[in-house]
Each structure stands twice: as structure tokens, then as C-alpha cells.
Image (cartoon, rainbow, N blue to C red; front, side, top):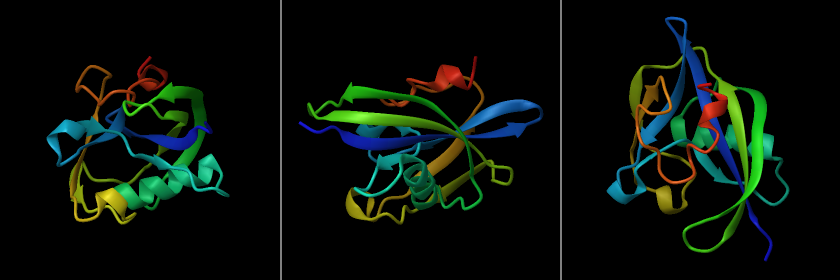
Length: 139
């Protein structure tokens, strides 16, 4: 089985000298609190995919990729294998919190995500797998 490539984005900002990471509350309770992520298209680089996913899910257009934090193979809850790419990105001009309707279509069609920032890895409980490289940000 060929793994499904997924690009994850830890969007960061500095607020009062402290690093924060962007997360969102999914409107379906079982989907929990997440970071922006999505599937990498067939001929797309993971770097381009993470920027596209950030734009589609958050509405932010001014993110800068800083670095690839990690890559791994991970078994999803449905048994599929994901080749995950976690990126650190930064943004200098974003609100403290906002609602956004994702524009990527698919299963997110018609949903509204609630975005906010966290200042530590234990401030919220992210859905399974989303916090796996958070220690690279909050070390």
C-alpha cells in the first residue's frame, strides 16, 4: 500500500515575546482541536501543499515556511498509512481569533472553523497525531 502524503502546518507568531501556535476547534466535536493539514496532491511538493492547505483552511495569505520539522509514517485510525510532513511556518499579521469557512471543498464543505492561538503544548489537547512535533516549537 502506498502511503497517503499529508502536510501539517504549525503556524507560529510572536506575541509579547512569546511563541504561539495556531490551532482550530473543528465544529464536529469528535474532530476536536487541530492544526491545519491536508492531503498532498499527486504532482505537488509538500512545501507547496502546506501553504495551500493553510490558505484554504485559515484564510491566511501571508505565511512563510521556516522549516520542515519532521517526516514520518503513521497509521491513521482507519488503518491507512500516512507519510506525514510537519512544517513550521510563521505569520506576522493575524488576529487573535477568528472564524473561517474552509475553501478546499470535500468533507470540509459548509463547515466553519474557530481559530485561536496556544502558548504551550499542554494548553489544549490536540486530536491524535497533531501534537506529535509540537515539542519542536515549545522546547
